[in-house]
Image (cartoon, rainbow, N blue to C red; front, side, top):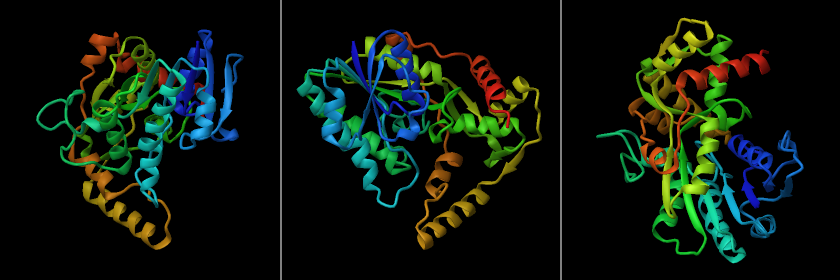
Length: 331
């Protein structure tokens, strides 16, 4: 069948596109930059240059498609104009669904983020956990929540829509901003990342890219209309994560605690530089709040029970990632 994939040059989107193309589907791959096409070449992949915020190019790419995987998004902790997050992550999705209904698309899978269910306060978050505990940590997060809220409570089109919410994705593939965990693993292997933020006790949820790809495909086949599914993996503190990396790689570096006060100081310096020179900050004080004040556990039980989603073990997933990095990114 014909399938549109937006964000097809991104970390997860490229993996989804290549897997579906290998299965014999005709893929309409929407991309923005020639420089990012890279290995996105296959006899079953047709490239469409365009932008998700441009209705004409989006409609052209969707023409004749039965299904859509919408992975394109604008991510980040800051933008000079915060409205760009809402244009790309909220308004563009509304337009995409209007076109999908007009073109007779049967099903759409929308990629969101696990961050919309909030941190683990008073229990492990699940799909039904309402956000608001304690606040949004970025305009990116809020724009994704608005997108979900629209789909779950306002959308009434004929095209069926399923939402998936990956957590901290890692694994072989494009070493982009979206693959920050793998880049951190790479730096650790080289002895260049030896810091434990705020003592390393805070917990995050990490999920292997192959599992996320499979979760997208399962959501398309089995996901219920106007439902969302958390695609998580394993809950690990920073201490546990680096201990696992040390055991799997045989590289047991001494780690140093980075106090929260130092992170806040660096964040304020970043924000001062942004105010004076209009350069994007690497991180903000609100981002530090998210990192050092909360745990980010999630439950993927719903995806496991309804979709058949089965996360790879942490040992296998990080082991394969280390092997891939050592074989392909030694320098």
